Structure formats: C-alpha cells, structure tokens
Image (cartoon, rainbow, N blue to C red; front, side, top):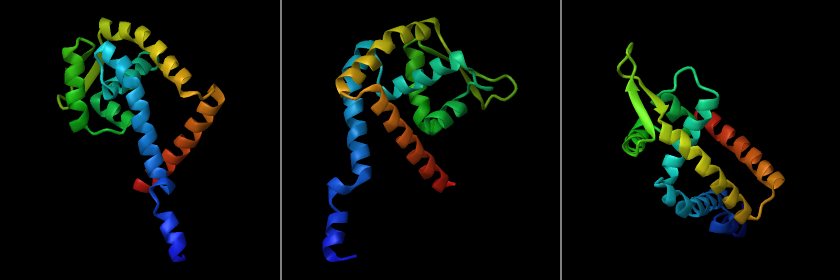
Length: 155
C-alpha cells in the first residue's frame, strides 16, 4: 500500500465505523424529543420494543437473560433500564420460582397501552429521513448481514 493509499484509508470520512456511529447518533437524536414526551429514553424504547414483540410471539422464557441476548446488552446495562421502566409502571419483574437467579419480565397494562402511542413516532421519523420503504428495507438487510458477519467473528 502506497503512502497516499494509506493516507486515504485513514481518513475519517472513509471509515465505515464512523458512518455507522454518526448515523446511529443522528437516529437517536431524532427519536429523543418524541420519546421524551413519553418519558422514555432510547435504550428504554428498545427494551419496550422487544417486550411488545414478545407479547405477540412470546419466547420460551421472557427473562432478563433473553432480553439481553435479543438486544446484545449485558445484565449490568439492562438492570438499571428495567428498574426505571418498573418505576414508571411499564414493566414488572419477577424472580422465577424454580431458579431465583432468573428474572422474568411482563408488561403492565400501562406498558401495553404505550405501544399505541409509539407507532406514529416511528412513522414520523421514517418520513423525516427521506428514505422510502424499499431503501429502508435494503439498508436494514445490509446492516443485518454486516451484524451477522461481525457477531460470527466474535465466536
């Protein structure tokens, strides 16, 4: 690799990781005012999305561990999120009777009701993005492929 090629390769604007990071931050900033109106942070919103998904298609064990696996987060990150959602009256946590180390999750009535308020937010952000549904679908597919490959490298 020539010195010029190396210099080009190291430019910030040529880094895929930076583009992903910047896009992620911009998306989160777009959601922030809408979610603040509902009393949620973006990570709490992600937790709620999974719990709403589980309402329709429950996993074998709707546990903190399963939630962490779904969101690619560890329990140290999830625990404060879940405590706050529980304080807000959206989620209930209950220790499993057969194994007290396992914590099961359920949505409260308020947590279920919040779902109807969230759908318009997603659609509003999609409209503001300027991407059509096909472009959004293609991007999601490519990101899923990239994520799958990167997770496979982790072993």
